[in-house]
Structure formats: structure tokens, C-alpha cells
Length: 499
Image 1 (cartoon, rainbow, N blue to C red):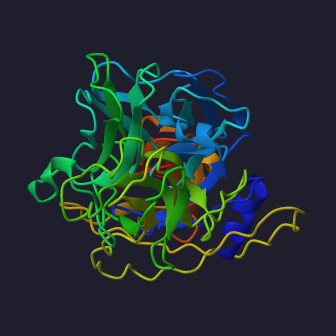
Image 2 (cartoon, rainbow, N blue to C red):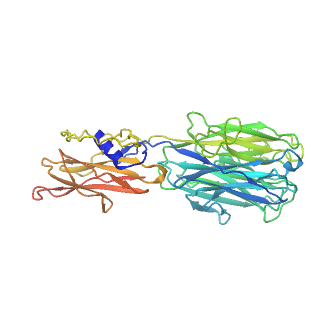
Image 3 (cartoon, rainbow, N blue to C red):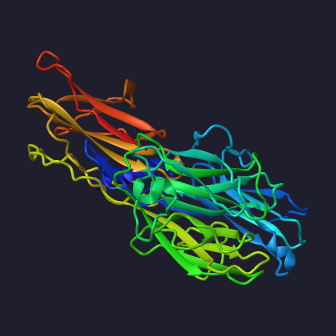
């Protein structure tokens, strides 16, 4: 088998992920990987009661799992009005999803961040977006679910919109947005993971520290100084895995932290929480400024009408934003501000969502196959500079096919996913149980032949090595004997897998 792996390395001139073998059983998967993309800050707003839009985008093949925002503010009085106006996913780095609620997009690769102003502005104002870009052999497609709520229509009364993922999908992250920017006291003051169930009042109560697999994302709009009008709207966005993907091996763990403050006028503070060593990879996060106890009671407003967010972003443990290209981010920070008045009984809240994958159910036991002589050794080709040797695969022999009797052909496939969603390498191995196995095996993906017929040596046909596109594949193998008068062609079991 080692010669076979060297052959695969020689054919595929990129660094490969772990090789796997499948028959009809679920197999271990690799962890999720996240890269943070964040461009330089965009200055503004430069006028009162307005906003600026900024965008962070993922590399080709990566998918948005979440995103963030950070603002630069002055320490003077003007800082009281500079605030987050929203964050959310985008298909192209410009378009917002504000139409009909429901699934509004799939496989998005951009994150928008909006910085808003009150009546006063300062030349120091700027906004920086953060895109958390996911690559995973398991979560290969995503969808965006949007929900919206008219409001807030009353001053100092929060409006909570909740977007929920479809059944049998995984929540990865989310965002919050309020419009219009011309209502300068209108802003989202919370964006957090939750559950759409009675225990969480359909999302009005946030997910707590240590909770796993939340299914919804909540956005809280707050109109600090005015009565509000009909155009005021609060939007919630949930980033979910695509239906049809088996995510039973995915665990998303919530990390949450709440502290008192800021309570003094014209004061800001940062609050951070982190993924634990066993939690997996940071995939997104959320933030709030509130009346506290968000995981045990419904959301309550903070102590002052002017309280607002100035950031929600991936960071180190001290609250410093991570740099562009970071692949080891493990903490999330909430950046909160009190506005122009003292704010008693006000709290800062922060959430981190952390994901890891684990192996699925063990393959069902099968009788040991009939011993067969090992195929003749194949000399390993010379080492090619720059290539990475593949880790050894775990080969799983498929269970007997119901109703099948010997003679028979069984198929096992070694799978080697390629990075960046480029598909993968498949190596079919056919075992022919027949007293006289002189013949060839033709492998097929559906009705398409994969290469040419491979000779059967000592009951085994290996190959060809195939590079397959991203998506689902169903491989079979057909054994054709040299002498058709003795036995007819034999078709194997079907092996289905996804790259």
C-alpha cells in the first residue's frame, strides 16, 4: 500500500490533507480551519447622521463563517455619537440582504461592516471589517438566513430580531444591522448566538457559556434618543451549514463572558472571551451592551440611551484585534461605550463560537475477507522536491452486499481531499472474489468511466488515481473476465462520498 501512496503523491503536485478510505461508513474528518481577513481601516463618517460601508473578503474557495467590526474613536465628546451601525454577510462585498426574510444566499465570501455617526463627527473616526474565512472537508457549503423586524419604534425599548438555521444544519455565526443611518440614535446594541426554543424565549435569551450547537442568531436594535418611525428596521443574519451535509460530527461550543460597565459618561471598555483547548477553532463571535443577565433572562436595555457598540472582533486575550491573515485567533472582544451620560446598571457581554469535528459512528463489523496473496511490489519513484508525503490511510472493507453471493467484486476507495475546496484525489481498490480472477476492472463515477481498465493481480485491481471535482461522487467497479463463458461481468457495491 505504501507504493500506492507514493504514486498518489507523484500525481498530485500540491500539499494534500489526510487520506481517508470509505465504503459505506462515516469516517473521521479533519478539523475546521479559519483565516481572518481584515483590510486597512476606512475613514469616516465625515458628516453627522450618516454611515460608511466597509468590506472584508475571503480567498477563493473559503466561506464566511462569521465576521466582525472595530472602530477608531476620539476620546472627546464627539466619540459619544460614533457607533456600530451593523455587520453582516454579502455575496459581493457591496450588496446587503434586506429583502424577503428566509434563505437569502449560499456560499458567501464577504463581510460588511457599517460605521455610523450621531450629530457630531471627528477626523479620527474609522471602521475596520473582519471576515472569518472557513475551510473544512465537512462543511463545504453554507447558507445565509435573514430575518427582520420593524422597529424599534419606541425610545429606549429594544427590538429583537432572530434568524434561525434550518433543521439538521449547524449555526456558524451571524450579524446584526439597523437602518436607516439618518436616525442617528438608532443602532444595533447586541448580536449573539441563541436557541429558537421556549427555554430561550425564541431567541430573546442568549446562549450561555458552555452551551453547544445553538441554532439561531439574534440582533437587538435600540433607538436611544427618539421615538422612532416606521422605516426603522432591525435585521438578524445567521450563517448556517447547507442542508444535506452530515454534520453529526460537528460540535459548536459557546464561550460567554459578562462584566459590569461602562457606567461613566464618555467611557469605553473592552471585554474578551476565548475558546478552550478542547473547544476547537474560533469561527465567529458576538457582542452586546445591556442591562445584564442575558443568558438567564430576556434581553434588557442598558442604563443609558446613548450606550452603544464600537466593536465586535477576533482578538488576542487582551482585546487587541488580530492582524490580516491570522490563522490562530482564539478570542473574541466586545468594544462598548457609554455615550454622553452616566450609565448605571450597564454590562458588557461577549460571545465566542468554537467548532471542532469528530469521527462518526464506527463501521459495522464485517467478516474478514478471504486471504489473498499480496500484489507484487512496485518500486517507489524518486522523491519529488516540494511534495508532502501523505499520511497512511485507514482502509475500511465494506460489509457484505445484501443478497450477493460469491463470485463477487467489492470496492474500497481511498479519498484525499485537496485544500481550498478544489475537490480531491480518489484511488479505487477492487477485490475480486473468484477462483479465476484473470481479467480487468473498470471504475466508474456514476456512468462516467474513470480512466481505463486496470488489470487484476492476485484478486486485486488498484487505480486509476483520479482527481475529482468538488461535490458528491458515487463510484462502482465492474470486473470483466477474459473468458466470458466461465463467468459474467461482476459489478461491485457503490461507494458514495463528497469532496
